[in-house]
Image (cartoon, rainbow, N blue to C red; front, side, top):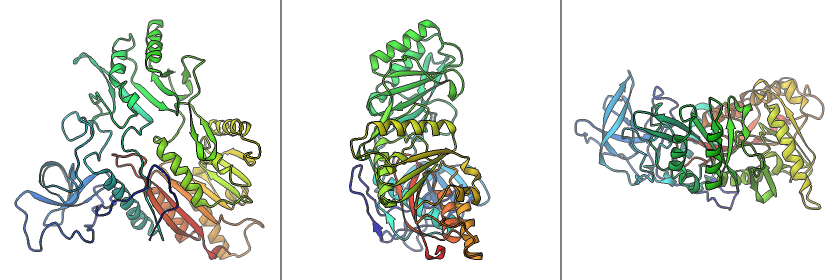
Length: 512
């Protein structure tokens, strides 16, 4: 069953008819996967010509997956499901091989012309995207299937309902990026961009259509700027952070910048409407070059929230998707006005402050003292601008190492009716295990839990890694007393193999 609890743009669409498998590494050889209605690539008993391969699936690295007659798996860069191809083998193991596409004998109906000249398998190709040759809605279907396969194969969990995937703009969406800078003396030029495919070298990028158009237009001027600086050999990186109205560029410089270079940077900022931040060492050294520059921020208009942030703070790469993601997460959480909510891994308050417009009380918990301080500042700033009668509910913020959670710590945070969990790639294993341990204690010794404490009724888990989500879901479902009532993919990074997702867990009667 598919369910849709959001009617908004970016749209949430699914593309049927694409087969994929969830193999964490090539060594984990996947089973063949077929889609009803498509049948096999070849009629029964048909033999392929020598050297041909029938691609049946796509793996987590966007490689086509084929099997030789002896059952050996071949992972093929550039190949798509339902294609007949030839490929050059680059690496061999006992039960799998890695190869690169050399010729397509039968093309997939989902194959499209890449939108960027720097994408591909050619020498010097940019490694920032992996799926531009695949139709966008088909990319979403791949990611949805990757999520489902991970939940089942790694967590032995099957969601009761599939959420319609969230899909937004396929181009111009990347508001956060880390661009490498390299002065190449032999070529007499400076390169600014992502690394080449499977290489440590910087790609010779003259355009990047996944960046916002105004940033894309700055790539060549940035190369000219750095080439004209005295510090051209000691500036290895430019970090991009776009807000709703401000574009910030963080220049990493290994040596102090001269007065002339500072003037060059400011002239560039004035010409292109950006602000420079300078970073001499670690993240703590980042400072705004021009003190009276406007504040970097993004809005969550449905909740009347504005989030100021610094360019090195973690914020979502895709603001279009983030707005829909927050809206959907809160709708699925179904917070009531008389309820207390905990936002785990709260960061700057991306979910916490919207939650504070709906609940009785909210607690945001984050591992970084610095982020907790920033969350408090954002809460107070938004509280001060709320309209009459629209005040945010009482909201506290706590700094705690969430990778070392224990049942005792969990109980100490008090009962919450609902949880929002948004961890980094490592997932929320310690949190899920602490909750599961409490459930096992409750089953073994009914009445042993502290008076007034019980597990949350509902948990919404936002994940940037389907493997760790599946692991944690397995704990919650098989040991924690929860059902996985829904799950769905979020196409936060179009044209890449990155899978963002969301799952909803509901407390079972085993807790009662």
